[in-house]
Length: 283
Image 1 (cartoon, rainbow, N blue to C red):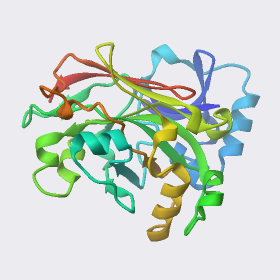
Image 2 (image 1 turned 45 degrees about the vertical axis):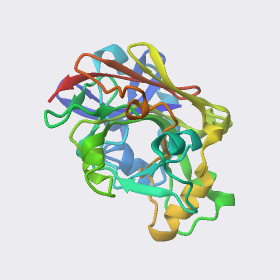
Image 3 (image 1 turned 60 degrees about the vertical axis):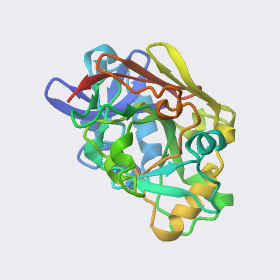
């Protein structure tokens, strides 16, 4: 099943995608779980599925909504850097014994169909297509062997990077947190719908041209390893997001370098999950 957070008119809600429409779960369950994150934090994914299955018809058409980031109020957005060998190589970095991690803020995200914002302070907004893993229940010091049972589902993520600000120091934070540079969506596909995420393929396109293409099986630190490592130093909760890293093919590593411009159209396409599409505008 697919779950979205969206805006219809002035109302913000969340729901399940059914055909070309959405069953509004905020309307049905909002007193108990005001947001999708609240429902996941409460371990209520099964209740969401059951409630959606009972609906006789969709409440609103997909074409009439504005997609918001899947989890717009995520408590933690933990991103993984340099997690594909070809991306390590193109950036001149060496393999490390532990994952390279940084954090994103909520305000840096936009939903499917909404514009990514190229900040006026930089001409170096770069693309990075990634798989997002959404946690479904609380856990600390989770063994890798049990880690996949903590996954609620998957989404597409565009970890847009403002390269000059990213490289001001050895810390990535400024270049990864400009407002509106991270696309997240269009929805969360529940883990039971994707039988083996390692057999899926990630493709990034800019104006229809393929820029990145790699299998999820090529992650250096796979999903169980990431969950085990991250949950060692922090408690993971339902609705937390782990963005797993980008493959080779980023614009900054090309000859000559390429960066996103206003009017460009980006697509992050992950088989079995969906296609996240965003235009680029100046901001």
